[in-house]
Length: 219
Image (cartoon, rainbow, N blue to C red):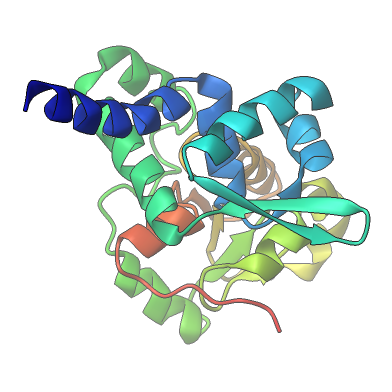
């Protein structure tokens, strides 16, 4: 009986081993945004393709990540949305328990530009009626894979040269990949400097879905 119990715990520990790496956690967050090749993941995580492949192998062994062939490229994706939920729950628990993480996150979102505690459903309603503009500043392919309802895609790399497209009489709510992502922070800082009313929504698509709220895909 003890041997059987040991085997059971050992199988669950495979998941713990797979996520016990900062880079593999980052890969999971990146794959919450949609399918990506190893080359794209390596570039976005700022590591070599060889090292990225090794991390992806560990995630595949734990059945957290799947692949499909597309031409000469291999596309990686999360095995299911429950893997995204695992990431959100793990990160949320860490934020709840670790003061060091709380301090680090406080440096990302400064007081005055956050929407902490604001009802997300009300943001959805106001975006639908045009009372606020929800801005997705991730790359276009991530927006296409899944985005908040009524959101507009404007990648951070294009924001400065396309500011004239945004109305100044409507508050702008910017979001990106989640609380650890800096693109929305940079977007809000730029918008505030240019005279816009701008707010940082720390939710990404994974957090939004975990709250039970709808996510749309581009057709």
